[in-house]
Image (cartoon, rainbow over all chains, first blue to last red; front, top):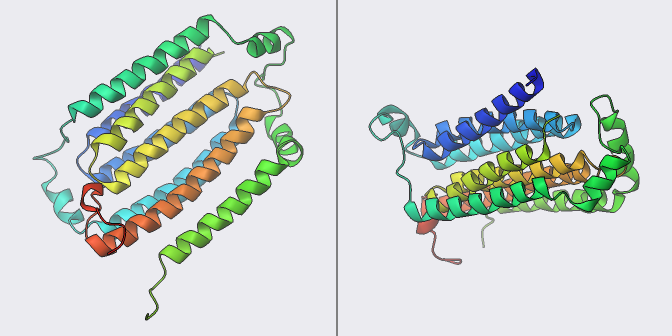
Length: 182
Length: 101
C-alpha cells in the first residue's frame, strides 16, 4: 500500500473520529471546533478525489464563512457559555438517544450495503468511461476545465444559484433587522 | 488510486453521524451542524463520482453549487435561530412551539 492510500485513510479516520466526538460532546463550543476539524479533513478527501478547486472552496466557504457565522450565533445565543466551559468535566459526554442510534445505524447499514453493491456492479457509464480512458488523472488541469464548463454548460444553474444567494442574503438581513415601531 | 467504494463508505459514515446529530441533540445550532455534515457527505459522493466524468465535470460543478446552497441555508437558518432566541430565550427546538406569538 503506497503513501497516498495511507494519507487517505488517515484523513478519513480523522473525519469520522472527530464527527463521532462532535456528537458525543456536551459542550457546544467544543463541538463547533471539532466540526472545523471535520470540514478540514473532508476537504483533504476532496483532494484525493482530484477536485482541488472544490477542496479550496470548501475551506474558504465553510471554514471561513459558515463556521465563523455559527460560532457568532452560538456566542450570541448561549448565556450559560462560561458556566458550561467551567463545569465541563462532570458531564463531559451527552448520553446517546437509543431511538436515534437505531435509525442512524439502519441508515448506515443501508448506505454501506448500497456502496458495496455498487463496487461489484459498476454502472454502465463508469465502465464505458473507464474503457475509453476518460478518467481524471492527477496531472489534469482540472481548475481550468471546471471554469470553462461552469461558464458554458452549467451557465443556467450558475445564474440561478447567484440569484438564490442574493435572495438568501437579503432574507437574512431582513430577518435580523431591528423592528420598526408598528 | 483510491477505489470509489471507499469514498462512498466514508460518506455513508458521515451521513449517519449527521442524521444522529439532527435527531438526538437539543440545540438548534448543533442540529444545523448535523445538516451540514449530511450535506458534506453528499458533496463527497458527488466529487468521488466526478472522477469518472472527465468531459463534463458534472460532479465537481454541482459540488460547488451545493456548497453555495449550504452557505445560503446557514445564513438564513442562523438568522431564524437568533430571532427565535430573542423571543423564547432558548435554542432548544422543543421549546419553540408557536409560529406566531
